[in-house]
Amino acid sequence: MTPRVAAGIGDRLLDRALATAAGRAGAPGRIRFTERQLYYEMCRVLRPLHAVPRRLPLTPAPPVRYERYEEALRRYGAVPGLLASGPVPAPVPVRREPSVPSEPSVPSEPDLHDYGLPRLLVCQSRQVARMLLANDVHLEAACPVFAADELPLDPRLVTGLGRVDGATVHVLHDASADGIALTARVREAVPGVRVSSMGLVPRHATALHLISPRGPAPDPGAPALPVALDPRERDWLAEGRYAEVESVPPARLLRTVLRLVRGPRTPGHSVWTGLRELRTAGFMTWPTNRPGDTRTRRDEPAPRDPVQG
Image 1 (cartoon, rainbow, N blue to C red):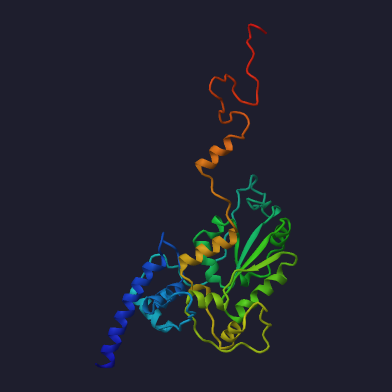
Image 2 (image 1 turned 90 degrees about the vertical axis):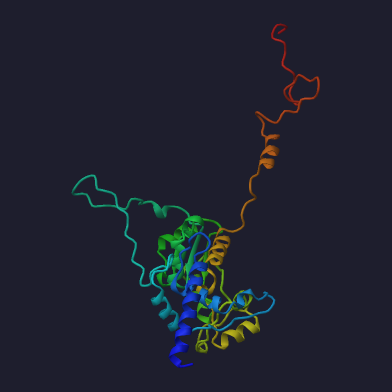
């Protein structure tokens, strides 16, 4: 077999893997995803080690180079749900029409920063923040989403966080030395506000069998790693290993972010709980009449005969 024929067979294999990955990345419900998320999904198609039981810690290397993936992506054409690459345009402020021609335009919500802010999410990757916004996570979780390169935050946002007891800034970062250090940077940017890391860390990467490329070893002068990391995690990072947030399957990433940001959910309301509540609701409560009893409630006297007074 000539190298040209072998390359052609390899291209067809990558094309089929990319087509399968494109369908998986957007499922269920037409999820929007980034190019790197599609790349990692393609890696899982080619090497499905994510199906191995969790008790076996694995962080496999990528089975295909990113350059080969980009070539396959160009051959494939338009991928439904794929977010366009490139810089994210700045949002255009909404303005109301001035009542007087000479009056300058003003923001439509001038008191937006006068309210308390219970939660906020900072993502290490701007593309991850863009993906979460494209899938309306900020609306479902009632949580603004920012990228780490937007630090420091607007002082008005920090003031809004300070108005709410227990307000939390969540940090979503890669399992890498730089990513883990991001939590400390955010903590310095929002003094007096609780900062919580939702990951990733190496133990998450090994449990989920995330694709883990290898880069240069961390700089010896880098900030100290958190004491919560065990020796195996420190050794994993010292080898230059890392796992990106985008290596998490898109649907799983959305579910996890929503669950962690919104916090524990209140018990659901059912028909039976509603009926039990009616017994103690006061007016129009559940009837408790006994046979032969003409009273409307046991704790109330029977109505007097209006003729007898």
